[in-house]
Image (cartoon, rainbow, N blue to C red; front, side):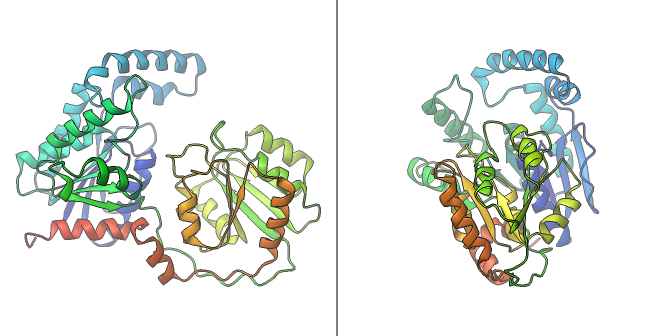
Length: 407
């Protein structure tokens, strides 16, 4: 089959999800075209993947170009806020000209395609996929809501009721000719309670973030060497106000011996981290490194560390990469609604430390976890527990939709 993905921000979290699914589609022998914004970084290179780039909004292009220059960035952000305010009446459609460019590119790529997939955000991708289907009725159309639209977040000038009203209005227009509407499991309750009377409700299919790729997961041995120094690895950024290493560093201070060493990869500028590294030789900090090197470090670790997220609606993608290694995971959480917790609870081999608790008590729990024996979860069990988080689950749906008329 020829499949067209309209996922406009290839470097975003949605782009990471699309990348995982597209890789699986290519493995299965499908031809794939990815419609995305022309971005500062070079397009992702995968054999057999065709890119069709769209010129982004002017302001987005300038932010990408000058985002590292403080004064220029502040000016551009201010201009963008004015533009967004002016577009408030038409939100989530911000720029009609940009939307027309996206629709033109998607229509051209879809002329001989079997399936077109439009991913929100941005709404322009779903609009383009809808219009491509209207112009080519034989085309199958899947609307992919990786982010919540109806019932989700919007401009702070709009209240929740207005966002919901607009979401339902747009969806009635865009989903009338969809063959399937894929939403995230996290939005199931809202849709079942508030959208059950919508004309597109029967087309809903609930999957989840497709980031658990077990096709290339390494084969592991049980961690049985209880006497050796344990290596703990954290991979990822540490954005201020969202995620902090402070609690875990405090916990580590209550473990005075050399029973463990901790490597933080991905953020070499966090002040709390660099100060801790200077006074505790068990802590090592590295800045950004190629993803292949990150994977090597995760593979060689004894334990993987994830630090709690303060945003309840922002599930860190790295926990799915962690689980693919089938290693014991140490997790901290600052809020009860930390978005990783449901996944980590299902994973099972996880020590969860409440950042609001006593670090000395957490240290005792950590020592017990480090000294315990850990048997890797089997591939089959991982598939069973997290099937909806695999790229294969989404690709199965795509093949089912694409095969309904015998193509």
